[in-house]
Image (cartoon, rainbow, N blue to C red; front, side, top):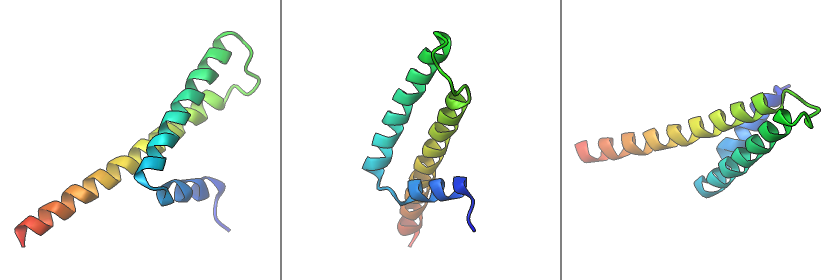
Length: 80
């Protein structure tokens, strides 16, 4: 049985670049809302800001992996 977190990362990896960028923007909005609610003491789930920060990091990591893979592929093609 796969872990729940691993499943979410796999779902993110399956998204195309445009959808991943949209997901990042949406997560930034969620993080802003969570911080605002936390500061005004309206947030019941206090772990939400941490979870959204980690989700942003996951998405940025996936985007960077793709960027590096593309650069590596271009470098390999120019060597040949």
